[in-house]
Length: 216
Image 1 (cartoon, rainbow, N blue to C red):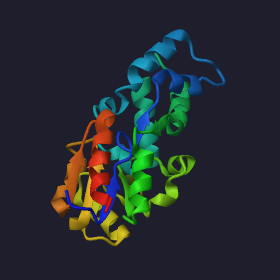
Image 2: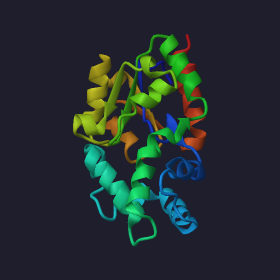
Image 3: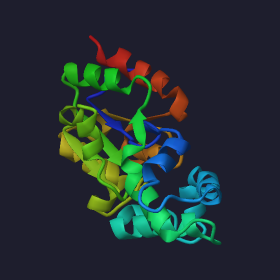
Image 4: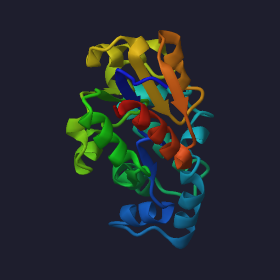
């Protein structure tokens, strides 16, 4: 591939991957400790919480409003009993701390930014991911962070990709979008961007491909 004029990164599943569910539960097990049965039910539901939320909420609607995002999570975790609302809320509040940088992403960001290629995060989410980027020491490497709940549209809507390209000052045709969703992230193609998708565990391959194109 030719060297991109800018690189757009999805966040969850691309830049960040979830840590273990047990660590997540432990982080939320403050105050009134959950019972063993409650922990087991939470463990079962956390892995598919957003897919299950689509049964009760219009798909993607929670990514347009922080309150709806919280509501969708809590209602899905507590459905049919087994997990109390207080514990579900603590799980939600602990969620931003339960992600780690994906394999190779820190090096990739350093390479791209180091060669003067602008970077943006483009994410469907109802939470602000900037504190996570800051915690990892890479926030300043991104010239734009485009979050669905702030801009009022979700991937694969072409508008969110245009907004990112405009924020970077690069024509859409000069951008490459890297993500893990063939549904959401390939929406970039509609505005003339190249889209590269991979599974979260194989994302390093996408990073390597683009990094090689960035290096002179």
